[in-house]
Length: 219
Image (cartoon, rainbow, N blue to C red):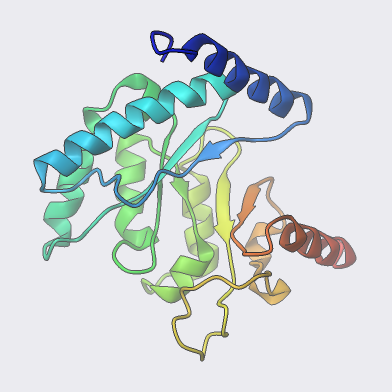
């Protein structure tokens, strides 16, 4: 980046963003796009994914972000083999990426039960997405998944929450609502120090709404 035209100025702007975040006690995290797939059998896809992760780790260093969060990837018709590929490729990551890497359970392929052994063995924190777990259950209760996810974090855990746009009986429950239904907030989270990322279309308004409810509930 520094060798590109205007590169030094761009880096300086990123560093200013990091200074602002630290001053205001903001935690920064990255969530690369869906084309970043660490267990892809396609060599080109994997190579481009590694390049993108290297770039994001560089920017994360400038701004002070401690999380680069990925889904497990595809199952490709053989989930055990896909998980082995994920393990192998994580082990080969450079330190700048691996020190920030987290894995998140998704709503179509990999559940918390699938990813937790990988996270435990490779010391990669699990970003537990409770909405995804509700969409793709694995037979384990939210309480148990929460406790197991907490053990993967050497620093403050980061979890995700969202609500279905048309309710659980509506079509496509994986789609996010503008706001968070307060009933969706797990009781198991209320007694832990967590960073909870609110994934909702109304953004800051959804966060404010949830914080108001949590305050009224005495949490």
